[in-house]
Length: 148
Image (cartoon, rainbow, N blue to C red; front, side, top):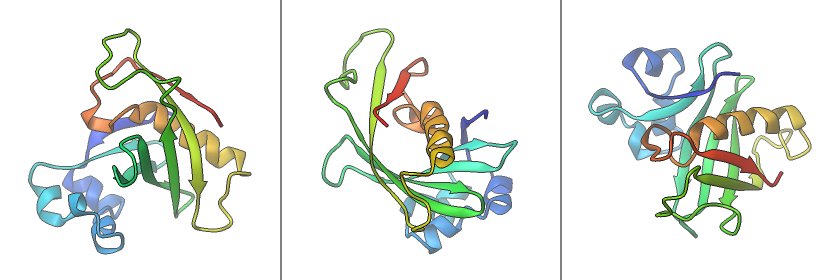
């Protein structure tokens, strides 16, 4: 799979129905004027149509992230936490920069869970491309690993 971080174009918004992230999940960054204006980023494999959208972060910890992974025509909620002992620090100037993710939760939908290895492999591929912050990533050569 070839995931890439891209700015959503108006064509992407229409093709992948990305405006639903505003209407269904109330994600401010997907509100129409943002999509038309400065744009919003997402991580996509254009060949398969699988994509990853950051859902939220910074609630309990600056290291936790929630995503929606659109896979097999379903939106699957995924939650990860950054392993701070194995990852580089925010302002480390080490090369290569390293990010290690722990899996906290998968689903809904309920039939998508931690036991679905194919789902986890796709999610890992998307997270490798997403790195630390998708289109806003400050570490384009970061090494991304997983504890799951």
